[in-house]
Amino acid sequence: MAKPTFTDEFKQGVVQYVLDHPDESKLSIAKRFDIADSTVHKWVKDADKNNGTIVSRGSGNFSSDEAKEIARLRKELKDTQDALDVLKKAIGILGK
Image (cartoon, rainbow, N blue to C red; front, top):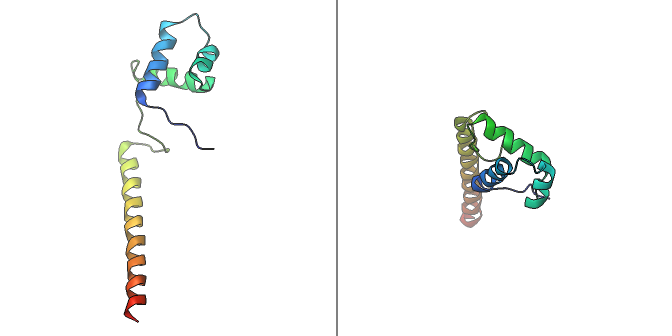
């Protein structure tokens, strides 16, 4: 099963709900939004570290935005090289 993805706006909304409803447990908030309570805890913790704002770079365990971009470019290069190999094989077959 694929890991669900949430927009920054949704995450920010959940964090704001937590802040606006301090008497409600994070478990009941998690159930209200149909997410794991550990996810609520993580988002609130992350927002606390960033002056109340959710900051995300997307999926993957990258140390920085630059590392994420390098990984993206490497994947793009590999995909291009794979496409080139397929074209070379097709030309070889057609040339015979």
